[in-house]
Length: 249
Image (tube, rainbow, N blue to C red; front, side, top):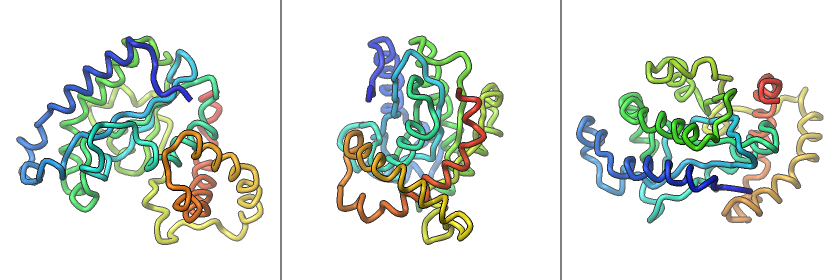
């Protein structure tokens, strides 16, 4: 895996990351955010990039990180998004192409405190998202024909309706069901799909285990406990991504 690109890209993203770390807009313009402690609302997450080539073909937009104060320094998200990393790398994007995963809002915030402010925060943070895309272009690492997907209804609504994103509508492929929708057994493999699911697990479970061990810092016992749930999500996502594969070829 290559999780860094040229020095040119590193410098471009360092400028964006430095600006994000210094940003106080949400604290000054949204009273509910301004009232939070420094460790309750903090920039401690960096976008994840996978470059196997000179071309980033896909940008995946997610919700804001939800573990404020969990890290002392910004670091690429790996464990929390292991499913998304695997799904994009192994099930969707060609091996010779790269991709980026980035949240619309850049500062970590507990889920219980995020819902009422996400619209305003996302609007305030959108210039940084545009700067990230500009950084890829500046480093000549964004494919002329690139695509964007959203993870969840809210990111998809932002991508399709926010004025700041109107120029990217032609690049919009669609959305993946958010991880949270799979909690509590709300999404289950139907009886009619059990055979197809068994075949999917037989093919992908060993590969997924090896992938997580190699690329993701993750507790192995926790992976064992969550493996069946992970396979169900990947199975559902694999079906959702099917219409996109032709575009990414």
